[in-house]
Structure formats: structure tokens, C-alpha cells
Amino acid sequence: MQSWIQMLSHILRRLLVAIPTLILISVFIFGLQKLLPGDPVLALAGEDRDPETLNRLRDLYGLNDPIWVQFLSWAKGVLQGDLGTSIRSGIPVSQMIATKLPVTLQLAAMSMVFAIFIGIPAGIISAVRKGTKLDYAANVVALSGLSIPNFWLGIMLILIVSVKFHLLPASGYVPPTEDFWLSMKTMIMPAFVLGTGLAASLMRHTRSSMLTVMRQDYVRTARAKGLREPIVILRHAFRNALTPVVTLIALLFGELIAGAVLTEQVFTIPGFGKMIVDAVFSRDYAVVQGVVLVTAIGFIIMNLLADLAYVLLNPRLRGR
Image (tube, rainbow, N blue to C red; front, side, top):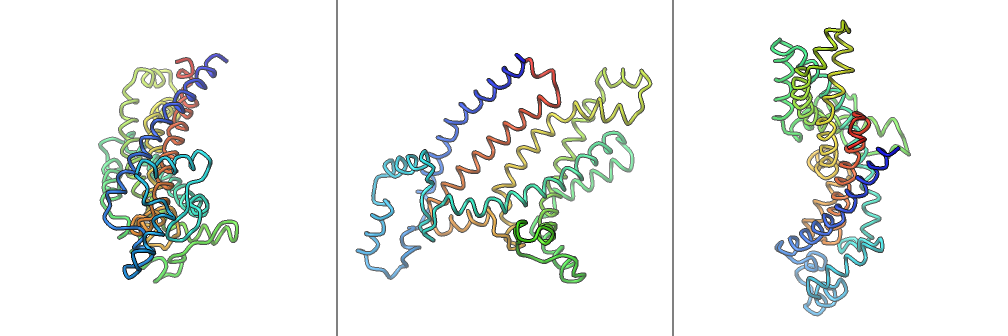
């Protein structure tokens, strides 16, 4: 019981540390985007509008106020659950995020499934069969997954799978609440494209971690006891090799939330990444700030989940 109380206090400390982290991130993104060239009011009203109209729009959105006043006004709204309103569309940022984020979360989750089921078994096999043809083949596949650009692989899959063989939809998105199976079909190719690159990273990290663990005394002891090799590999070696892999999975999932821009563009998926790119080009400051803040919170949550996974995988950590 005491170990679980200690773990809970550790999580609370991590949450307290996350507060200044989020504040610093907010200050940086708020200040840096002000350095971008261009004027959001001109992007909204057009170049030919008269100066009086432009000035009224700047007053309306508080752009004539000092930067620190604008930041404090935005931060006060965030604390009240208000992320602001999009200058471009007039829609609340929280509503836009609530619409787009589930799309990217579905894509990220499916991509991670592909990555885990491809990368981790390949890493285990490569480590167990070190120096064999299977090891070399797995390393070649991993290097290919890291080298091939996502947009090129996506275009090739569309040409072969959709255009030539008509097996899956080429693009678009259907919410799973409307048609679950059609939603899965439309997301298989983009998820596979993202998952192959992640699988390559997972394979390399799993292989390296497994090779380190398999040289430990407890693995040799398990073999000396006469345990079958699959039990030694999966129960003793793989379980202890999972700690760095879990960390990588958490970080990769966080990157997927904000980094699936090219894949979403190729497959015409109205997700989180496309929204932030459009917001940057149109100088829609409120949207950029809201997206970055949500992304930062996502990274913090994934790291906390990784900490919990450590404890579940290694009970010895509960007492530390």
C-alpha cells in the first residue's frame, strides 16, 4: 500500500512540474509567433481594405494592445476553459480542436498498432537471431522504413492499392460513429504509412534493449534451470527490455498527434496537423496557441502513462 502511495505522490510531483513547463511553452509560442511576418488582420480583411476598418478589426481582436496584455488576456481565458476564437473562421478554438483532434487520435492509435505489431516482434527476432540472415533482413527493413518519405509511400499506396486494384478508398475520412468499417478502411493506408516509420524505430530500440538484457545473469540462470527458450525470451528477457521501448512508444505517440501533417495532406484527412498548418499560414494566432498547448498537455500525459507502465512492468520500482 505504501509503495502505491509513493507512486501517487510521484505523479502529483510530475503534475506540479508540468505547470511551469506549460507556462514556458505558452510564453515561447506566444512570443515567437509574433515574430512571423505578415498581419492576421490583412489575411482576414484583404490588402485593399481601408486603414480604419483594419484598425477596428485590430481593436476587436486586441491586436493593438501590448504583447504582455494580449498574453495575460489569453492566459486568463485558458484558465477559464476558453482558448479564444479563430480570427479566420470565427469558431471557438476549443470547438475546432474537439472536432479535429479525434481524427488525428484515431490515425495515431492505428499507426501505433501497426508500429507495435511490426517493430517489436522484428526487434525480438533480430536480437535472438543476431548475426543471421533474419537479423540482416530486419535491419534492412528498418533502415528502409526510416529512409522512405511518408508522402512518397502514401502516393505509391494510393496508386497501387486504390487506383490499380480498388481495394481501399484513396482518400477522405469517415467518422467511426457513422460507419465503423468504412472508417477503418479509409484509415488503414495512412496508418500503415505512419506506422512503418515508427516500426523501424521500435525495431531498432527493441533489438538494442533485448541484446543488453540477454547478457544479464538472470537470463543465463533461467536457461540453466532448463526453462524453454520461448519462456526465457518472453517472460524474462522481453519483460525487462520493455522499459526503454515504453518510453519510445509514449514519445512517438505524442509526436504523431502533431506530426502527421504530410500524411493527412496526402490522404485528405481533416485532422489536427492540417489545422495547425492552415492556422500558421493565415496567422490565426489563437488556433496556433491552442493547438500547441493541447499538444504539450498530450506529451505530458503520455510521459505520465509511461511512468505508470514502468511500475506495472517492473514491480520493484513501486518501492522507489
